[in-house]
Length: 344
Image (tube, rainbow, N blue to C red; front, side, top):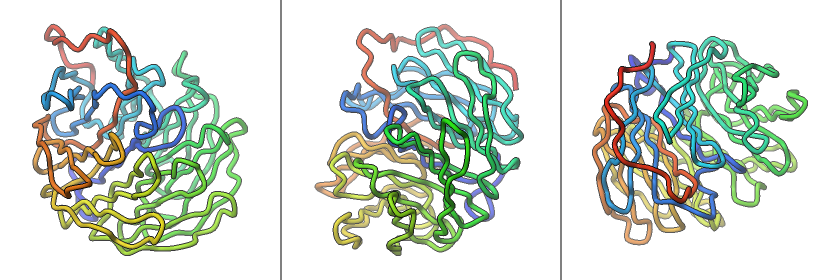
């Protein structure tokens, strides 16, 4: 299992995601042209999702979810979240308007998440099942699956091309999947234990954080070949790209730093101390990035121009993932009534 008992190579697996999760397309938190300044953070030990007003520097809502949540993805309209629970074999949908949580079974150990097809589908990596699963967001039913290699971690989507990229950690490769057909079209060898992924804004480059080889792979998405590898720091678990594509950002879990890589030269431009155990990243703008610190139970806002931490915001215990939500005018962020924790 890949739950809260393990950290790094001997303990828990970290996220990036998405936004983590930093995928391209509808679910790419770092690529939204309209940003609300509202971030969502999943805390694995606390079993909650926190909504953070970055401008105010505080948590504005805390939503209980089934235990040991790992990854996050947002619906394109910003009104719902998908949360994976590897230990339970569940994916949850959180309605941000009502706070209601609906969970459905997906595979054996659902982990990485990415919304695709304009919000009609959510893609889920099954760590134990070694597949990528497509789920219809309206019904919660599986509509396709494809083998993607051993221990698939994170997935990102190029919505324009209809492709998904999956980091197969124990296969040391990235699988490329045609989302409509749910077929694997290519497998690209990368470094050792690829985990987090991010696409450049133009979709021509895929950046891959390799946990055990302590480096960053650069993959040409046209030729499907690795074109470069950059040494970064110990156990890189998170990766993101600034909206202008100029900087690649990597969290080094074991050194507690944010590594800034110049995308043109592929040289390390800066190393910023941000916490004791940083994991997931979400880019706010060209000069601002959010990073969660598993051990510090906080999300930090980092100013890339000054190389300093602007703010530290306390969240639930064991934060794994942070994403920025699309702007939704009139969204209610007032506290919800206390409710019982959902099943699990």
